[in-house]
Image (cartoon, rainbow, N blue to C red; front, top):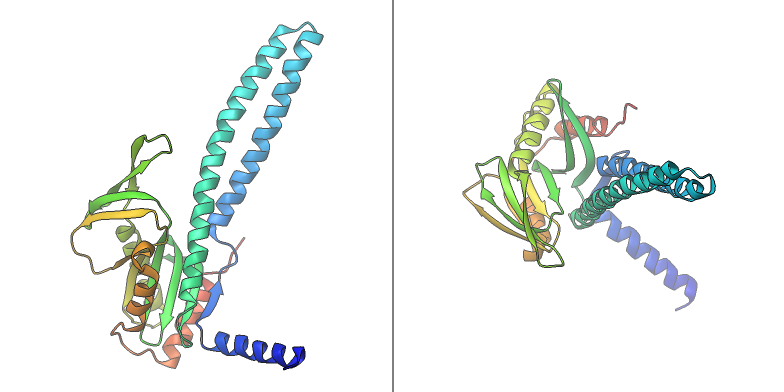
Length: 271
């Protein structure tokens, strides 16, 4: 087989593979990317003030102005604390972005006829929901909240606040209160369902929580209509199986057209 014919076979394989996969529709900008840009800007400011502080510290002795050196040291100290906070926030946001990208890659394995919308802001009744993913299947609509958190998560399904326990590299364990992703996705489901009703689409919207980080453990008691999947327990495959085998109402072409319009409008950035 010649190089040209081999490339043609490969190209046809790729095209065929794409035709068998779900359609992926991304919003203009992920809210995490926007937040990350803000923290990058703060990092630049922090380094600028560190440079200014160093300059003041060096000028002090030369100008026989000890206060300059003192002010420079103070500026460096404050800027260094800000920089430490910036690095922490950027690591968290970066991990969140990586988790969402991994989720999109997994969702793309859904067959043709499925559409995955990512990075939406759905508005209803004067309030808005930032939604990670909406999967529209031939037989239903699914809102997926992706979490890339680590540690042990303890809570009750009916409670609004859960506790996250994390252990540092030095062995120190600390806890942090986090908002229940079940409550979060429940709010998203409600607002999207109400927004679709405004367009004449009355369809059940099913919520799902997907933990995309392998270093998370759940210790959550209680029953919930919204399933939770962990990537460390084959969550990606189980989530896709859940969506594909979900027993919902078949959507008409008109309903899918209206749903598509609402979701694409929710990706538009008015700014």
